[in-house]
Length: 315
Image 1 (cartoon, rainbow, N blue to C red):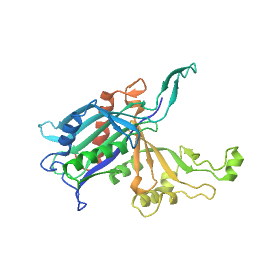
Image 2 (image 1 turned 180 degrees about the vertical axis):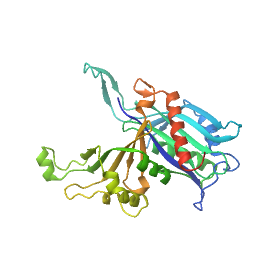
Image 3 (image 1 turned 30 degrees about the vertical axis):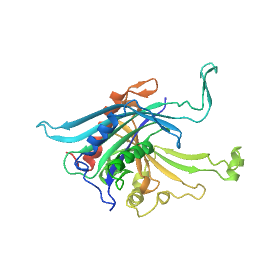
């Protein structure tokens, strides 16, 4: 079964002066109300992107305001279920058990899969919200969501743009480092030298080869490398200075934490790409290989609230 992941991004709407706009007042309308209006009108209408050779449609759109016991709004949340897939190549669909061809996918046919997404904006005056995007194995929709949201915002004003950035609130990162359990350290190298390729019986010059060195139950790593990790988060050093090896070129360093009910994987490769992918496979109901929308919404809401609390946006 493929892993179901959730990745969080900060969302801003910026004007031509590169200033972030208050998200509840974009030309008199809130961002989520505007997105809900547009996406509701596009439910089950597939859009074909000939440049990217994919199709895209909204399948479910739901909006809610979460309130406290006094009925005051805490945050608005927009849930989206999206179906998307790529076309442009012929292929054979086979039965994995028998090896028999069950269908020949034509060049205009797309293998469409569902993905969940939600957007959260705290009630009050805020210029940043949170977007949570589901992935399935290596498949995801973050870049697609960013493109669609930008198209909608520019329809209001061509000078506006949507900015999505992976977010690691410093308070949240400190919670992981101090309260989480480090399960593994993964050193990743993209590519392999000719000498190593010969040694392992691999073809030379194959760029897609990925090497990993994985240290499980890395006792002492956080204690001994804590200062370097903090320096990396603060932009004082790069990820490859956290661990330095003479015989292994580190192209990414990933930290896998157990925190609460879930596992969280942090890629330290560059502050502009610092991101947490949360493994929620055990927390959602899986039917036919995909999480149900209801269970996914519950998990996304829980994770979104964690980020809002870490950023002091809600109590």
